[in-house]
Amino acid sequence: MTLDTARSTVTKVLVAVLLGVVAAVGHGTPARAHGADAPVALGYEVSVDTVSEPGVTVRAVEGGARLELRSASPRTVVVLGRQGEAFLRVSPDGVDENRRSSTWAASRTLTGVVDGTADPQAPPDWRRVSKERVVRWHDERARELPARAWSVPLEVDGTTPGIIRGTIRAANPPGTGWWWSGALLAAVVIGAFAHRSRVALAVVAAVAGGVVVAWIVVGAGLATSPAENLATQLLARLWPLLTGLGVLAAAVLQALRKPVAGIVTAIAGACLAVMTGFADAAVFSNGSLAGPGWGRWAVAVALGGGLGLLAAGALRWYRTPVEDK
Image (cartoon, rainbow, N blue to C red):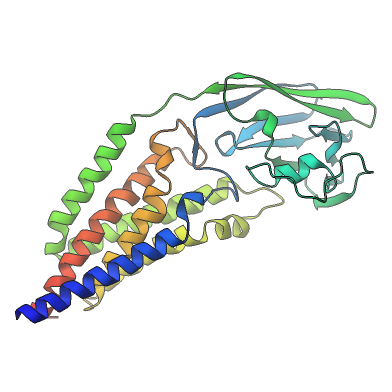
């Protein structure tokens, strides 16, 4: 291979990889959330200690980002908002939400931003959201440190007061340095050796892509509720899901010995490392996971595997012109 050809090949690799990374970063991956608007991990744990109404159970879900209320009571239970207004109504007919509640407006996202349509003093504007007696919501009263007790008031059958009581405590952090070190070491090993064999590259890409896709699908399943089905949750994770599928596609191209397999693998690996590895690296420092318990392993695989595939795929692409395609 001539010097000009080598330079041209290197230029193609750098441009393509940089475009892939820029596209991934441009998507704004650090803002990506799970459970429609739940983080992948939190530094605190939320527990529910008591619920005054018999037949009503409440638990913290998605790593403490949301509360879930289930009712088997024949009575109508209303969750009151931060200003004492009717917020959610759970009756034998299903779940209704008051669209005029400022707490309803704030509960739509983790940021708690209230739009101008909220008016807690106005008569409730009830909207049916589910025929099942299960509801999930973000509640600022049961979020964030410092460690403390929290409570959410209830109203039963329009007259009887009730209450949900719980506790927030700091979560034990994982071994942050070990997780980062392991992921980066895996990237170095993959980058140094996997480029020597299409089979090795295909296996690494299949494992990395498969683990990430499985993590996203399982996490979406855990975040579903009567008002948010699996399709809704997967749509909230669309770009990371597509990135995982792209890495699986790169594995297929490697197995089929396609000439473009190297550069596709490099770009897919870069996107995987950015969109799922770095973007979800909070799992390495926070103790409470929003998804399945093996989420840290999935992110470590995405980070180490993605960076390793970026390096190995680029090296493979560099060598492609002098190999028997």
